[in-house]
Length: 110
Image (cartoon, rainbow, N blue to C red; front, side, top):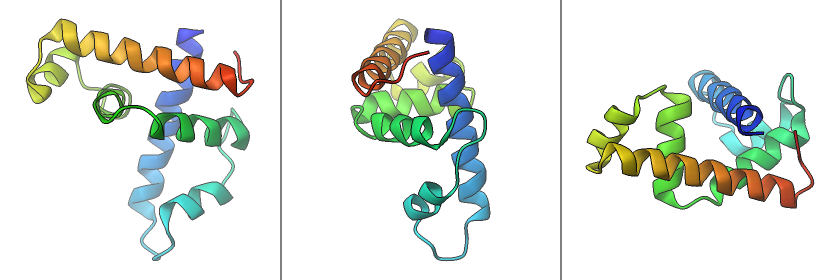
């Protein structure tokens, strides 16, 4: 389950990053993303994941973005956030658990 969630989140962040770079037409990003179905895992899962991420605490969103989107190491994340590496790992795992629970409440399972 964790690998599935990790893969979906990583792909979703990569897709969103590419779209942000290419979206300079003045259309709000959220509206633009809602119109484009996500490849491989469907628009419903994509939307649910984006909404679940938006409900995370800011510190958890930041760790998720740094790890999944930027591919930052836990050492780099810890340095940027001025926390220990163990704390960075804990935030990441708690964020993944929160995402998993949120998606399961919505009926999305691996």
